[in-house]
Image 1 (spheres, rainbow, N blue to C red):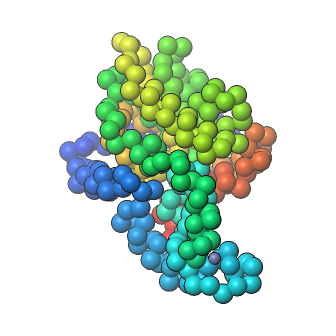
Image 2: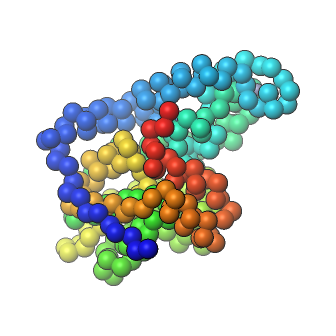
Length: 257
Ligand SMILES: [Zn+2]
């Protein structure tokens, strides 16, 4: 079944000034940590009350009180799952530090994924959004001209590392995201259009919309069922199918609590 894109007018800043200001405030407060804002704090407290014991210790038959609420799939791997309750687990201090030790040298991820310093590109931007495997890349290929700038982290991973982008490591994603940020700051030529492809939802989607001030937002839509069928049918996504499906669920239900 062909995908029918919806083209929306970007919301006016004037009409949504307070919502946008809230997003901006949330982001400003998160420069040192991994997107740990007010929404996160509420979800964390809710999770803490429901799972009072360390999950890793419990799996080894030990009863140890929890200390930290941890993202099972790291924020760096799937920023979309930041506020997804079923992506959280309780861990004790030692299990948590064992898990996070390997991330310590990677720096401040949020600031790379959501570059607060970024200025809106001086040219026309089209923002393409939608769940995984709904045809964003195909849509852009069909509509962009050969001189346009296409900004899609998966495509950047593929061209930098010559790998299946869904099998990237954390470090490769981080490198590709730095490259995306560099492309976002490149001067644009007259008549060039920048196509920015994202799976961001909820606040994160608004954040990009506020940052890039796109002339057009194209929302590619399909149902969750269609999305999962396409993920299952895509050979390149099989090794990371579980994560892809989790991202699809998050996309269709971004504030599941
Ligand atoms: Zn433990």
